[in-house]
Length: 392
Image 1 (cartoon, rainbow, N blue to C red):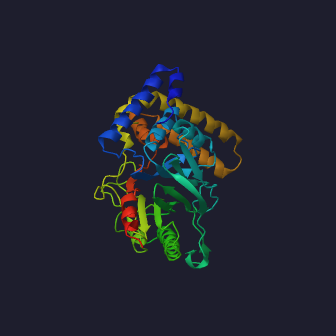
Image 2 (image 1 turned 180 degrees about the horizontal axis):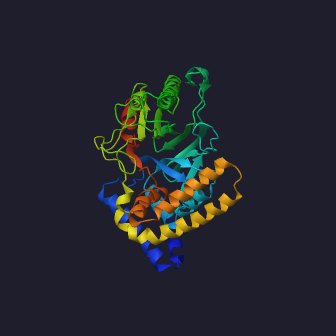
Image 3 (image 1 turned 60 degrees about the horizontal axis):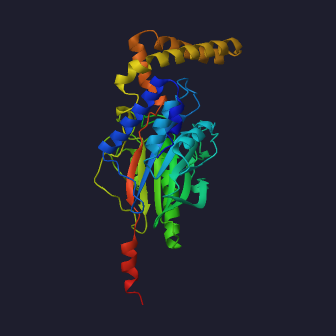
């Protein structure tokens, strides 16, 4: 359970009550939607979540409110291990989140990606419950060998825009290499070079891990279960990006609703490859493996409650941008700042425009992606005992 003791210290009664009521709604929603309960030894609850720009305010909608960290921690606490994307350069927000999660949880993350093509100084990583999941000592970013590198029309060979990250974990009997990605987005136009690069990145990571899985099986290595998750920017089942995973031997856990905030796109995916057939999912036919947290926090009906907060934030942002404009020397910088100023002024102009702003603002408080999950069987005791019963 997360550390909720600091909530007692919030002197503003309305803010404390708002935070606690939000937490109570999330907890009830997770129960009502039959999210699996943590089990000591029988199953592993594994997931993936893109935590939108956590938490650098580069898009001028933040920073996150204190209560948002509690909501995110509450959701993560229901997982045994979860891959996270879009952790930013400053680690203070992540450390605040970990303090709320408490001593049972730990994390392992990459350094920032400095790629000029969509790297955005982001980190990838994992948060895991130490009582359930053990880091077994192997971790690394995936660097493509020459034959798998991504091609451009110029014949130039490229690495990923954001290097995928993989870690060896064990939970109970279950050993697995857990990899996460944040694939280059580029464009949704399937004929564009940017879209082709997106598909090439998915193909490259799938081929790389498929080769590793094959070598692992041939050498009788313990890590023969490969799980690949993250923000693939896949449009839908059957698209080129989706097929790039399947065609390289990965089984994709399908869902009947999307994982973006309005549940229309299938950007986030969980896929796996098991050479020993050890990947057994509980509730394998279930197709609703997302947590739509906007049913409980930052709801449409909460607009009036957050209206004064947004107005105050917009006024602060306007002041900051006007000060920045005075110091700007280049026309490019001035143009960019003036664009931000115009957007902020337009947002507060009418109640209708502020409501539209709220829809976007709340995704920078929680996320514009929803957590995706599976539950995996990890107790192989009966199978093992049967195997050794009649050994010579």
